[in-house]
Length: 175
Image (cartoon, rainbow, N blue to C red; front, top):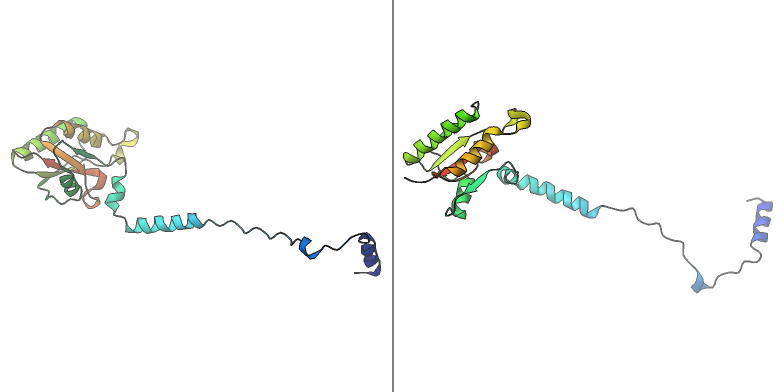
């Protein structure tokens, strides 16, 4: 600092009075930068959950997951069916069929299996990925038809290894 600057400063401060010690104010502390503590914890929890989750449980939350049970079918049977614990005794694949062909073939298949004493079958209807804007046409048809047929006690979308939301396990009434 030059002599002129020092002199100028003294003149500007000539009438200033020192503060008593209890009046001294410390300069404001800078605010800490905000941290997303909970967001990071949420992200870690979501990652951990996704790594531990069963793909079938995740798919069950999907609106494409089919589930139906008649009165009298217990929660235990439905849980066993959805986990694929019943032995699949027969299967039909409706891929490539028109809606009318699929309806006729599925009706015949369900009737034949129920009359033959089979209790669990798999119906592969596809996910409707090739249907464009119309969505899963066969899947909606299967869902609608099987709810109407008395031979069908219950059905659920299959486990991922058996087709996921592109197929259903169906529990059939015993003759």
